[in-house]
Length: 193
Image (cartoon, rainbow, N blue to C red; front, side, top):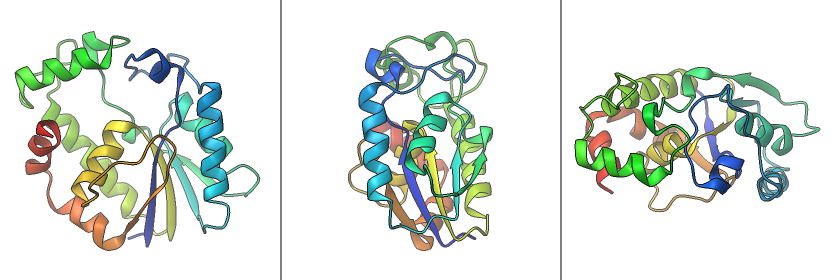
């Protein structure tokens, strides 16, 4: 198992600025000017931090955040599409509050329209993907992921507040194991908070 996971949400994207959801990595959508500045601030914060591997999803916003955050350091990179955001179905490119309202009204076990997948099954897949990530033996890994996954991992690991976009959060092995220990209750707790 890796020693330390530095978890970071990608910097502000054009979709964040528009307030809409995007879970299709084939839809172009990079960082805003503000997002590039956030990623550069993360680069400065991480300048003296040992990082053995940088992991991202295959979304343009995550890749661009990593390009800036580890620029010039020669850090190995790994794209893990299994950590991508799950499909938004009929809510793709719609305001985030519409999906949140639907999820609160329908719970974790009703398939999301247009996907055939439940929230619970998406969380289980994400949990399995994070398990693969933390079983790596790379020492210290910087993982640049998406808000849903970052929020879930940090809340489940005992963080009381969530950092803003492109602000690194360091998880020890103990905190990672805490996250991995409890999937089912976290699905319900995450959406009721």
